[in-house]
Length: 150
Image (cartoon, rainbow, N blue to C red; front, side, top):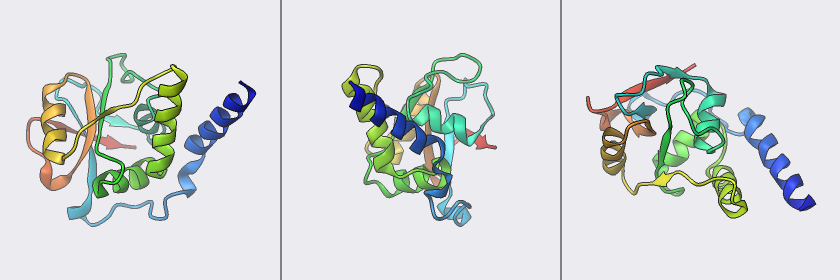
């Protein structure tokens, strides 16, 4: 039990103080930008990095206005997932996976829903109220909205 608590505290510290983790904090070229996208019914227009990180780490399960959030992610080895996690959340994919695994195995939470392609991500976000995910700019269409990061 004590070991679990120590590991959970260590992970929380990693996720909360990890801005130094990603080498490149700025945006890639516009063509390479990976953007936060949400279902059109989401009223939140922007999120802080901390709130975004909490949503994707599954520590926060609702939007700031209280609406239930449904999180979608690509596989850990997908290059778009890696870019999003490093650039926007400032953590590595394996750190995020560790947070999900810990929540699932301890019975205190769940992992986000995985999709295999950006096309599937677009479809699921467009069809799921409260959905949040990410896409490269060129994969966007008018069925989803972009959420800015403060």
